Length: 216
Ligand code: AMP
Image 1 (cartoon, helix red, strand yellow):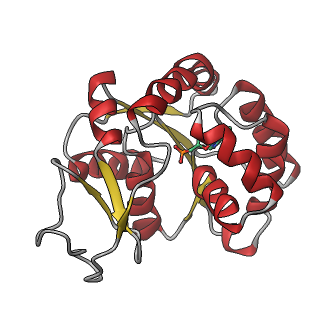
Image 2 (cartoon, helix red, strand yellow):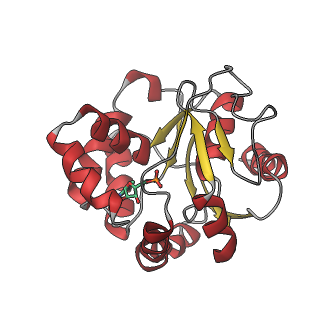
């Protein structure tokens, strides 16, 4: 099963992708996480990505396509994958189709998570994660059970994404509105798009997605 999860920053696509990964045995391919790993490694790609991410803009299509094509060719993707953060432009969407066709693969479903803009802002600016295991939290919406201690691994070290700040958020939301939203009609025309209401609780959204995937 090959899926795309689409949605603006703060819609919960990363959270939902991880849950789908666990439930369906498909691998989550997060383009943002791949770029953050490149930033952490200090590579040339990482330096470029850091600059682009810090201002909330998008990386060039050619670079993202090359990265994601290489990732899809890795053996763990053979049982299926869930694309989180890619494609983000019409060019990426069209090339993804060609890429999959050339490999005898296809997209089964595109899920669009819809949320209101004011909620996106609140969700993004308050979120952080455990520095050791990556478990996600939020200052007000989802703090750890014991203050300052990770529910999952007990670590007391937390970190925030450098692009999860008030200055960058609006540029990221704008990039979504201007570039990524354009690909929704493309998938609707292909008959594989389903919208999900992302304003509800995490487990309710997961349930909706599970129902959609069960229907094929
Ligand atoms: P995300 O983790 O999906 O929110 O992505 C974080 C940042 O990485 C984005 O704001 C972009 O700067 C960059 N990025 C991630 N995926 C893509 C993509 N498919 N195309 C262009 N830029 C991307």
